[in-house]
Length: 368
Figure 1 (cartoon, rainbow, N blue to C red):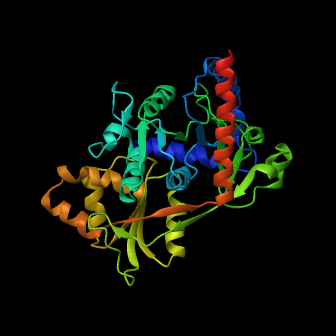
Figure 2: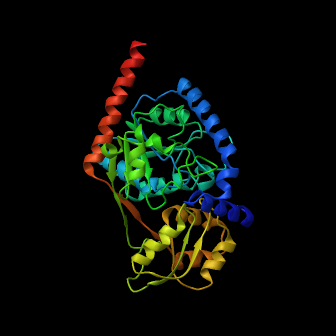
Figure 3: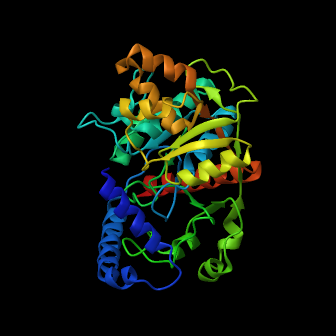
């Protein structure tokens, strides 16, 4: 993303979250109506053609554009279900993958971010580190990716994103909501930040949030209170990207980088943990890193803290780096393990909803 494009994107986002009417809200109204019309027609068409795999499907998504912290929640669900004997498959679109037509791609130790995108590689790395028996697949055609996972023997599919991919039948819908970001004035793209109207929250099975949701949204979604579940996130101590050793407890003067949906939230969380950020680098979500980025970070000779999502991209660069830069990565790069803490009853209830609805879906297919 060029500097000009990034500045334009940030400017538009500021207009989205302005609580006062601004010129953008009026100028972009026709585009919002066009987006709404196209979205409704596409949804109707996709639902008519929808197919479902021969296992239950849980969709974890959002009505809001950009990341909402889905990845730690996906990993928390997988940990629980795998610990209870289920073979889980995680399905993603493969955003930023450079694959052309080699789909679906089921990740292995040889998979790179070019093959599968940074989020899929991140999931795979986390599950491998924790010795969890799970398959991770990417495919822009999610019905095809789901069928590939079923062919590999999974008992349950969890989709990381894909709420609006209506060609894939789902048995349980979970939507992420972040009160700190809000919904602006509730407008759809490109006038506002929403992919679907806020009333969509009234039709999903569960809504996960880190805090209470404003009354104004409850008024538009009468059933929201019954399906809202709160969760929290836990930031663990930094570990070295290469050796896995923890950062010394007295090393608090650090740098930080983030190429995620909300870098500032990551930086603020680090500061609350007691780290003094002498410099921080915020990049666009899914930013591709180069040697030049690394040289800038390492110039200060301080530990560089990052998310797991960014760490997998830096690891992928290692074979192409000079010996000096490889040594710098091994010395200065530390990732922050991040976990979502979910209510056990919610986790079990989501699975029960998915399994019950899948059974109904199968009975309907058999009687057709």
